[in-house]
Length: 396
Image (cartoon, rainbow, N blue to C red; front, side, top):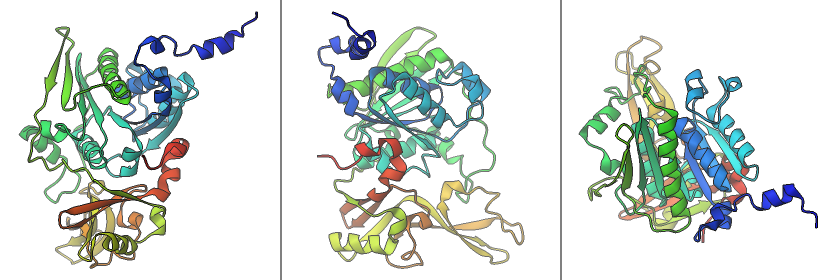
């Protein structure tokens, strides 16, 4: 009997991991994972997800490949210098496992990534290097009721932490110094500072592979339905060759802990619906006093105190720097006017969500007293999710 070696090899691709009694390869083939960050940790995360056979991955990163990335990022090559990390990492992950569907996203997850992507994912795994992005990921995951795994590395050390909707969250672990450093990214007028110190952290390829391994292992257990405890971390002391577990207490007064019990999927696209139409739908569902809460702080106008010049902006607040906010007429700093909600007033009702400064495939929250509901602009799913869009949709 002649056996086609290529067929036999493909059939046994996952044979060793399938020897684990609880392993479910079909479950992994159906899994949907959001990976945020495609640097040193993100490379290792994507490599691991490809090797174990995860079916659908969405990878988000805003940066381009630099020379220093080559010593810490297994998926990047010399010819990739200057290219977008997310796109190259997605291509190389597919090379490792051609059956994996991978969609790259180039943008800032704080301002550019809609909350619908967090809801699409079974779990989010982050390889981030700043607190602002971690806070954004934490709040998005909590709001849509999804777990996420945080990772951080420095020198030979690192930590991998799992957060679930009912556990302590990332913000529960932040101390006063963390919040001060986060606030330092903004000026007195809340605008982004034009010059921040480059956040280059000393790291090694070994620390990133160890921490990413722990991150993926936690995610794999979660995807298989094994017992894993949220609000816990594994702390790696590489210098002393020590690993210890830590549990974080949940702060009952933490403002980040809100999971939307009801999320309504609207078939429209974000450019095909106005804020007024969204408000009317929400009031029909929740009552006439309902208001819409925007998912981000939106800079409505910039006003110059000296010459009275006013300019409509409609961007997420953090996207506007101090320099960009200076008055073009007199050069003086301008004061920002913010909008956080839509209640029927102002000049917002005829604007679409993108014209308000919101990203596509986002969730707008409606509130009336203690009742809240999310409205997902689901018509954007195919455009945003791309290659992994066929797996999108509501869950039973």
